[in-house]
Length: 248
Image (tube, rainbow, N blue to C red; front, side):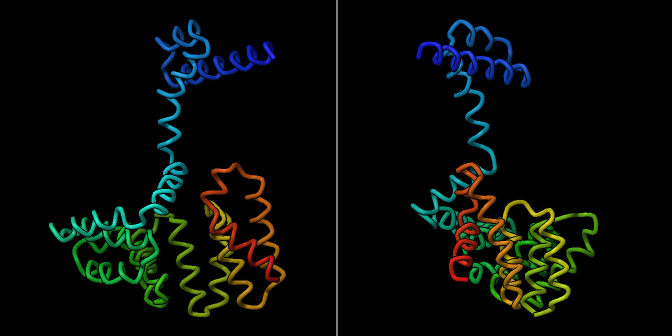
């Protein structure tokens, strides 16, 4: 057991030294790590590594999800108050974005509609929020128009979320060939399983069940072999895929 402990401490020290060297932190941390083998390495991790991990996008999603379970409207109250006080475009947009984030697109859509004719209408973030609110509320033709305008105004901007919204807008209007083309393109580069799961759902909807099941099984297989934090972030799509397989 003593050898295992020493080996573990040695590997921990080596990892910390390599990380410190790569990030320009070797001095004075090398003295702390070497002369206080376990405590020094632990201190290095707490000060220099954990804050980076905790600030990563994946960690932020996990924190947000945990906080949402306890108080889903924690940010909504703040943004609503700010919008009431200032009535600025930024404040109203933050409020609309928060409605979207917590799944209340029907309440965010009127805010986006009110902002659309303003001088900020060409803001990419506003256009994407507006398009998402339209898709989530079933206004598919209008969403297609907003996304077409976005593409004309920002021809060099690649937005995976926007392309997935476009596929959903086309599918919602039963523009089958165009929707399939868009889905097949976006699943090649969309981060995470959402695009593939929505594609599978659409295939199932139009009667291509065998293909849909293949994609569902791929999602489950991939997430089953992923680290726990990946499973937590993608729980919605994992559960959707598993439920579809179970119901087949």
